[in-house]
Amino acid sequence: MVTESIVVLVLTLLIAYLYLRRGKGAMALAVLPLGVLPAMGLLGALIQAQLPVDFLLSPVHWRLLFIMVGMIAGSALLGIISTNLKKTKTRRLYLILCCGFTVGFAFAEVLSILQIL
Image (cartoon, rainbow, N blue to C red):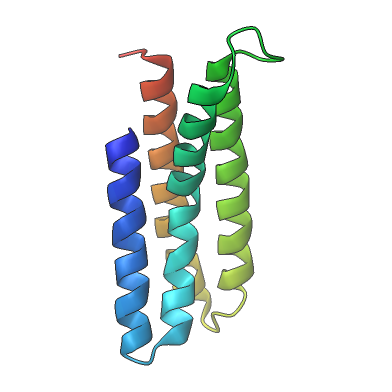
C-alpha cells in the first residue's frame, strides 16, 4: 500500500494546487484532509521499518496505530472544514464522500497490513 499511498498523496496535492492556481483557496483547503491518512500510512511504514522487533509494541501494531491516528486527524479536519460550508446538502455530501473515501482507504490499508486476503 506504499505505492497507493504515494499516488493518493500526490494526486491530493496536485488537485489542491490546481484549485489554488484558479483562485479557489477554499476548495484547495477542502481537498487537503484527504491526504492525511495516506501521509500517516507512509509515516507508519517508515517508522515500522526502523523499529526493533522487541520494542514496546510489534511493528504491525505501530503501523495500525498510525492508521488510526490518521483516520482521527483526517476526520477531525473534515469536520472542521465542513463547518464553513453554508448549505446543508453540500455539507452532507462533502462529509459522506470524504469520510467514505477515508474509511475505504483505511480499510484497504488495514487489510494489506494484516494480509487477511
